[in-house]
Length: 168
Image (cartoon, rainbow, N blue to C red; front, side, top):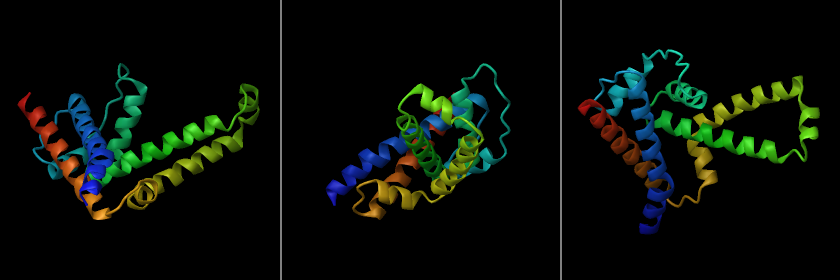
């Protein structure tokens, strides 16, 4: 049991805490957040309209839009993390499937775009079913220990980020 708690903290808790903290801080730099806890933040994030900041990095804008789309709560953060994880693995797999640049250029076409669109929808569905995905992907012993650690990590990181935001 102790080993399972340590694995859950290292493999799930720390990444969830870091990502939750970063996303709240990143959002607070773009818009003024008045929330004091995670449930208030979730309601506040639903009403945010992002202005396209031409100065901001393109990847940051895309990730931020996805974060807001998933809602910012615990379930949304895990869906967001799962979506990014699945997408990264697919990009790596996509790159590894081509033996040469010429092979890649020859495969570009209409069906490649259709395939990307279908894969994006499937990845979104996978992200929404994150408990099943992570249970199959990680060496999880007690599922409830992992969920409790993840909830605590998200809650603590979000409250800390909101406290830091409200003090500034």
